[in-house]
Image (cartoon, rainbow, N blue to C red; front, side):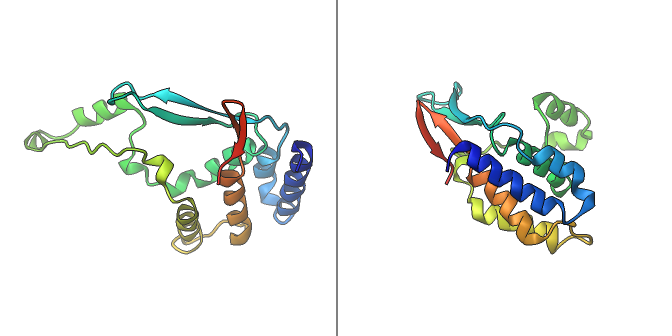
Length: 171
């Protein structure tokens, strides 16, 4: 499917889902594609590791589903348990400084996990998100579960990108 055809198909799907609920107007304003550049895959060196492997980075700015990804991210922010998250190293140090003196007897252990994010089972992750949104919460989103699943699949598995002049997409 050509880029402009795919762009039209996504816009049509956004419009179809968006008309189901008026409250989703802002969501679909953000999520529907305005342009369709190809994503770029590149690597950043992990200079702290032996043989300096590359950390894969997929830049999806301006891609067909970039807006949809942003809209879903905003929607899923309250699903994430932030009490165990650290924004950056500086906030981590600040949190350590606020610990009571009794924590001085503890040791911090770092487990080095290689290729963590490239090995996350995507289908299972989507099911966990859906279960959290629709089964464990007191109020489910107004968007239908099947629609949400299709949007999550589309935004995570259908991002075409270029890497060393080769065109591919996530699978």
